[in-house]
Image (cartoon, rainbow, N blue to C red; front, side):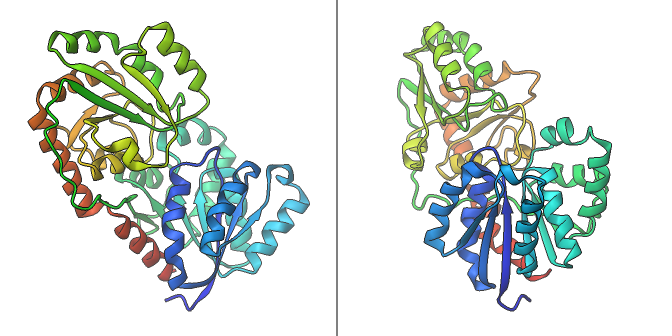
Length: 370
């Protein structure tokens, strides 16, 4: 049991996403076992966002930006922070940077917990190619106290690929709060509202979905249903997607909504969440949609199948058979009672095993046992 010690959390990624949401959810609850919590940020452009959050929670943010990467000044900054901490929590996004944190922590004989946020596809594509990196990951990671993974697939992958000991890895699913007293209706109208939520990027694959949507729109019209697709999020492909919608004359059916932090605005009175991603970890948006009683149609990548049960609370699609997404959207659009039943099943599964409280409590339990 930890006796009110100092916790150092390392975080780094290219954009504010699931890894940061996870931190924002658990940090307010860490004060029950730590006197002091410090965030070390390895990306300059994220410092302001983290500081804004941290100030509310009385958490110190220490920026160690890219300009110091692998310099003596950089390493000394990190070493000092690690030396003055009791437990190191590595919110692992960039394996190379995280290994530096882990290596220095091992030198100072600190207790270490690491959570793997990167999806398996990205790790396989980029981080398995340098043999020396794979060797270092295997050697160093098997010396930490615990490695948290987000899904069954991730656990198997890390154990088989990097040789993580089975006793080392623990699955802790992401979790969200269910919407209280939610009334899920059949929503029998002439409109079918489909949402895509996430960063506008190649990984999320919104462009392929839009490219293939015209036949579905026409099929819906034949059944007197108006398909409305809302894209929530921002990112590097925003201008490309905006042009794609205009060039394809889809402005009446596909709406680029932008980023919003208001869940009600995104999920209330929506019918289906579509996730055409090429790769994923364990996405929060899937759980957020379920909390509103929305069924999910998603490519079977990453840890999505740990939550989405095909034909029960949504549909899983092979990413090589992309056109099946349209078929499942149509089936749910013309069968509102099936849609309602699946949405309720999604919400029930969330309430059983994927709540924010379960995620937070499980993380604290791991830290307490280090």
